[in-house]
Image 1 (tube, rainbow, N blue to C red):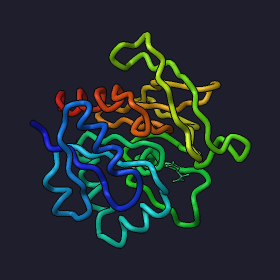
Image 2 (tube, rainbow, N blue to C red):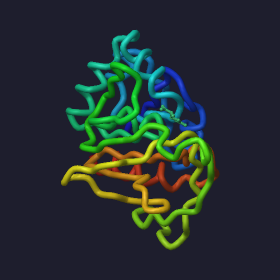
Image 3 (cartoon, helix red, strand yellow):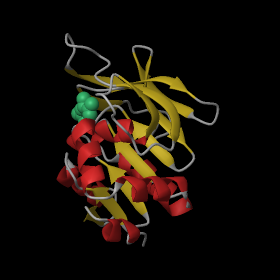
Length: 195
Ligand code: GLN
């Protein structure tokens, strides 16, 4: 059984652990470089990417995270976690850094004030039971503005890209961990098992 970590600097860590359990995997929080070394895969939760970045720097985790992701560790980021996995961000605070690894440009808080938070049923054909729409929860969510050649677009809402995969890296603008549907986590665990 692979060991799945959840980056636990800030954000909805427990919700991801609950969903991973629902999808059949035990998981462990990751706060230190030693804890990162001990996992085979990592979930980066939703929360606040500026805070997550600052804490990752403070805890000496940013470089180790970059090395693991660049070295092929499977990773899944939701919302702020998607921002952390993006090579480029728009609308970040001054100096905001990411872990990177995905050849995407992500716009923070892209949906704007009017629809600060919303829910939508989206088509996500890469999931198990592909005919069944996924109920997606967006909270001050980013969208993906540009994707590089190696990136697969997995889902859109109103034309905007909200789920992407590049090899072993998966990211969603929304929060499946806040619903009862574990299919995105199941997809990630399939990626982990293949790796
Ligand atoms: N707007 C947040 C950020 O920039 C992300 C919001 C979320 O994770 N729900 O990090």
